[in-house]
Image: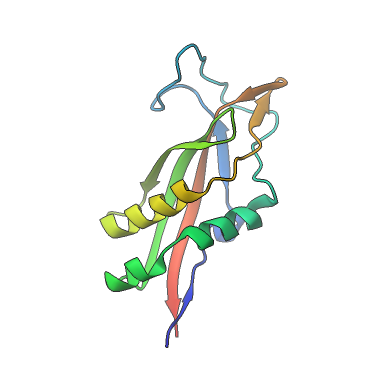
Length: 138
């Protein structure tokens, strides 16, 4: 029987963040876009290992296996809002609908809020990019 190995999140320890510049991300009413550089990036409670574990717990690998997918990778982009929630979750780098849908569903199921980023002592919205990888092993 195949064991499923999900190496989601932390591909080479990569997690890139940038504060919102306003273009391409809908702003809430009466909010200004954040500056391009934050003084303190957002943090997931428990760190990136906890984020990875939450993602793995929400990810349904059987959906991809049923679709015949043995390996998949994509880059997730999302906004970490001022309240610590994730919004505007999208997938780059993969054209397979099943892969994109399952990665997005797993991310949307994560209810733990981030500690938001700060710029000049003010809480800001931050865009994050996160590589995600799925592999089956024997």
